[in-house]
Image (cartoon, rainbow, N blue to C red; front, side, top):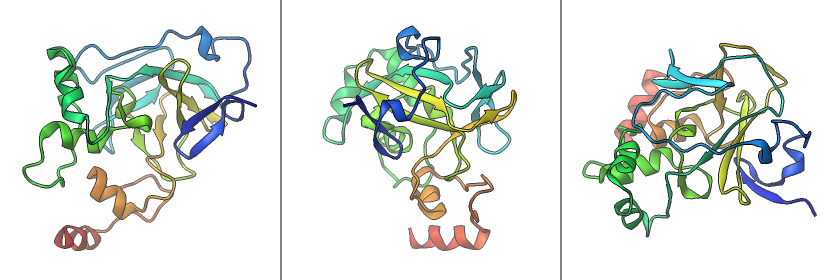
Length: 214
């Protein structure tokens, strides 16, 4: 049986995600990264985090990429669930707390929500982990997203791989925040209007209706 990982679309065999070629595209050749500062910028040989014209910060290819290229293998800042969130956060050192608190917050969260709870709800990934680098990747609706992610239990890392056949240098790298999420759900959960081109998006009237209901 193939090892199985939790992905953005459910449990699938690892072999269905990458080719397994014996090169830098396999997990065993990678050194996992973990964020150690509050600066949003990050760069490796495949992408860099920079300002996006559509949504704050985003990830952009720095070279031509192809399907199944491994572009990020990230250790979580911490892992928790709703019942252990505050305890887990308090165990972090001051630098790690500042990194967590530097992430984007959905402005539509309920007033009075503790900052770390709002950040958690906006940014947590598969396995309820906070991954500050991966959290900078913007969304595109299915099938427009060009990067997929999954959690690899053996390395205890979130892994991002290219989903598209080709991605040109300079192109924004985008993941899906959930295949079945509507644009309304995306707006209410994350606080942005999707402009990926694969969905109808939200009009000003739609936004007014959603916020009035909230």
